[in-house]
Length: 111
Image (tube, rainbow, N blue to C red; front, top):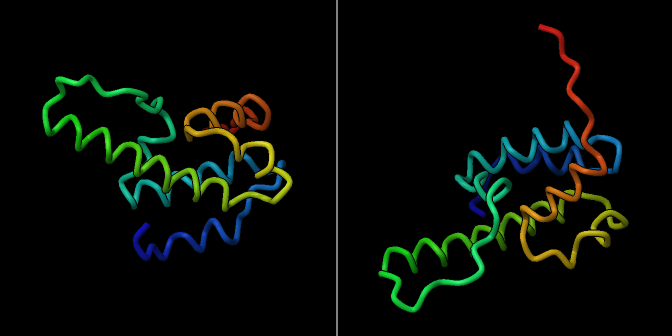
C-alpha cells in the first residue's frame, strides 16, 4: 500500500463488532483511493490455464497481490479477537461475506 493518508481513518475506526457499516464505508474509501476495492466484492481466482497469455498472467498476479494487501488492511483494522476469527481465510471476499452475514445492519437512512 502506498503512503495513503486515508489509512488514518481505519486506525481511528477499528472494527469492534458493533460498527460494521461505518467500518466498511471507511474501508471502501481507503481501497478506492488505492484502486483495490474490487477485491472486496469479487472472488479470488484460483487457477490460471497453462495456455494463458502474458496479460492474463499479469492480471492474475496483480489480483493475488492486491488480495494479499487488502487482506492485511482488513485484518489490521479490526480488534485482535475478531482477527482470530478470520485470519485463516485466504480471500478477502470470503472474509467480507462471512462478516456481512454476522455484522451487517440494514441501512435505515431516509432521504
